[in-house]
Amino acid sequence: MKIVRISLSIFFTICIIFFVFIMYGQRSLYMVELERTRTLKEQIEIATEENKRLRFEIENQMTDEYIEMIARELGFVRNTETIFIPNN
Image (cartoon, rainbow, N blue to C red):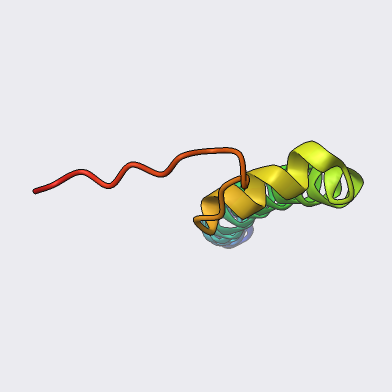
């Protein structure tokens, strides 16, 4: 009877140790997946903002205001405007 009791104690101790190792491993995997999920959410947010910006650009590409804005960024001026070049 004493041998059975010792054997059961050893068996349950081994089971508990095994369970602790399994839970620790699962926790480690969970933390890795949680970080991966956070990274993916950030990437989705960045892509969504970029998508909004690109859609706005596409929608406004053919307006006169947009064409004028791009032309001015490239250094163009209207033929009725006077260009002043500062002396440095």
